[in-house]
Each structure stands twice: as C-alpha cells, then as structure tokens.
Image 1 (cartoon, rainbow, N blue to C red):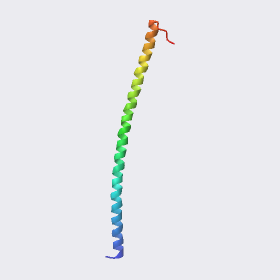
Image 2: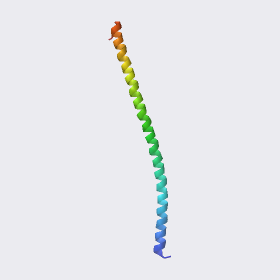
Image 3: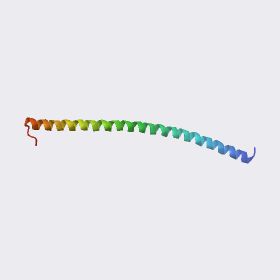
Length: 76
C-alpha cells in the first residue's frame, strides 16, 4: 500500500470513531429531550388543574357572597 492509501484508511478510521461518538451523544441528547417533553406535558396538565381549582373557588366564593346578601349577612 502506498502512503496515500494508508492516509485515506487512517482518515476513514478516525471518521468512523468520530461518528460512533456522535451517535452516542445524539442518543443521549434525544433521551434528555424526551424527558423534558414529558415534564412539560405534566406541567401543562397541572396548569389546567390549577385553573380549574381557581374557577371552582371563585364560583364558590361568589355563591357564598350572593347567599350572604340574601340571608342578611353583612359583607365588608
């Protein structure tokens, strides 16, 4: 083999090693993105839960104020 063939072979070997490292890194990043996506989806559900609870509390408070004025309770 000549020097050109050896040099090309060495470059291909280095490139394959770099590609293997890049594949491992990409797989790791993909797993992290998937876990962050799952966390954000959970937070999205929690946000709607909190909005629902706030609506229920607001409606109950409005109902109690209305009931209190009907029954003669003083509202200050």
